[in-house]
Amino acid sequence: MDKLEEARRVFDIEIEALQKMRESLDETFVRILDEIVACQGKVIVTGMGKPGHVGTKIAATLASLGTSSFFLHPAEAMHGDLGMVTANDLVIAISYSGESEEIIKILPNIKIIGAKIIGITGNGNSTLALNSDLVQVFPKFREACYLGLAPTSSTTVELCYGDALAVVASGIYGFKDADFGKFHPAGALGKKLILRVEDLMTTGEKNAVVPSDATLKDVILELSKKGLGIVSIVDEENRLRGVITDGDLRGQLLKGVDIYSLSVDDIMSKHPFTIRENRLAVEALNLLKKRNISYMPVLDAERRVVGTIRMKDIVNIGIVG
Image (tube, rainbow, N blue to C red; front, side, top):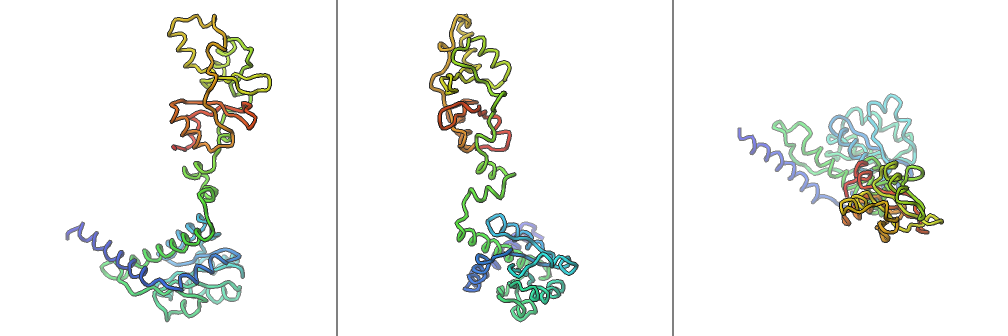
């Protein structure tokens, strides 16, 4: 056996099945899509065995792209989980044969509840097809396993069909990257789209700030105490006048200057890079990288210092730019 050639054969058969499904798409897909978009309740996906695993993924993809959805296990549905279904819901039942026992048994009860049923099957004369309000019948294609029995091509087509429904529906909703971020707060992408500077900056007593009439000794003590690597110099209204970093002090020491003979004004950078508190954290990260700095003051709309944002605080939360 040529192992690689056999693997390619599986790919070829499943690609062929996908191509057949693509070419057979018609108004049935549009009608099913319209039902999903118009659904006033939840889109409930159900399936048994391998189609059930695929159905779980389809429900998750729908949910992540703006369609309120969940997976209902048909066997559990027969033992009380049908209580999750309401008349406003849309049930998508997946069975390539259209005769999966667990699916067939719950169809009458779903009809009693009043939810619409969308059937996805490869058999237009099956029990599922005949008891669905709308049915998508897949074209005939080969399964990729040697016996032609294990769900392989059929589950691949089911998965892609579900992806198409979810993605096209999200386009109809006008689903944006910020919406995606709302549903993925724990992921790197979600953090990038959601977290703002104010969520990560150092504030209050932990922030390093001294008044403009402070001595250089005060600045050094503040740098040491707060450990941020930067101190903001502010006027009486807490507006930024400049910053002094530990790098600024090291630079003076390397020059052999008696730093205690200098004033704050002699050392501070009077036009430092800053960022507003309401900007995305990823914007702060990109600015820090671009300017090759590790930290900067955070200002409000009145240029008052409200915090300090550091590159490591952004990177440590999982945002990488």
